[in-house]
Length: 391
Image (cartoon, rainbow, N blue to C red; front, side, top):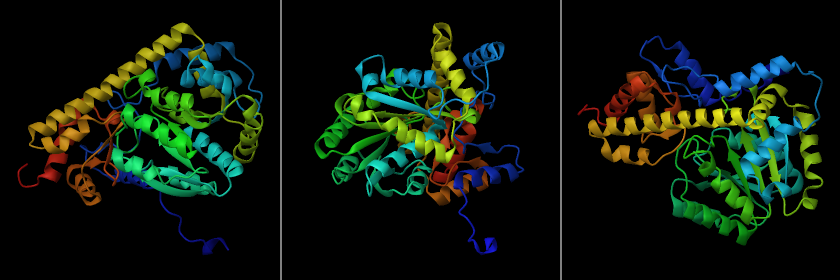
């Protein structure tokens, strides 16, 4: 029976990474995976994380099972970090998840339970895993334009009262393009008038304009609307990629409106993975509950954000010096870990084949993974692909 299974689709991101590993050229540049790397090309362990791990090791707490909601102190810390110390946390509940991916899936299951037959709208282009996660949960998916503000608003005027709209809260993956605050306010107006529910994916907060500014849109939606779903990842801004640490947050009109939500999320978790891993959540909790560690983490996060911004500025300047100013200008307005290059899939394959620069075929490259001394290589490859005769 098993031999009758059709060949499964290959994840394009991991497929590119495998191909990169087979490329013998020493100058090859891997900008595929969404991980932060320092100027030497290493994904570092943050000092605040190391210090928290030392404290945890010295404490040597029990490894006994926790409940299905995971680390309760972590959940409280996530609510405060994402929503602030105000009244929003009083009408919110949270459960720990297996990274942001687990949060997306748990909340998708909640949508299926509470709004059978609903449609979830995702951006076009979208994070490569959004559609598979939602469809695996049994939800119908439609798309809206992302990089054109008027197109974004026009498309979402078609979202109905029972629909859910998945929005990346900041540092959009794969484009790096974020709406202005005016467009975010217009989205809140649309949601309020039509009744659809925002589903915010927060994976890069702190790496765009700073932690508070990156959380502004999420908090604004939470303040203005009766229901909001939020999937939070700690992979990027705590550097806990392999520890799979995340959180699913649900805001209702009141605490009473949420009385069955946490149980529904726990039931979904039970069938998927039972209990989320403890170590990453314990690290985050230790950092956020200690004033000195929290300040150290914020300072490190700002350093990471500044390096990413410096890489983007340097790339724009290098492209302008190579006669690609018209293509470089949109890059200067992008934010976060990724840059969406103005290259077609075929041009991205040329960039890989002729210049040993690896990005996704959709045009995404990881600015946060670019060694500072190799910005020129990336710029020359892009310029040679765009202007093959002149460069």
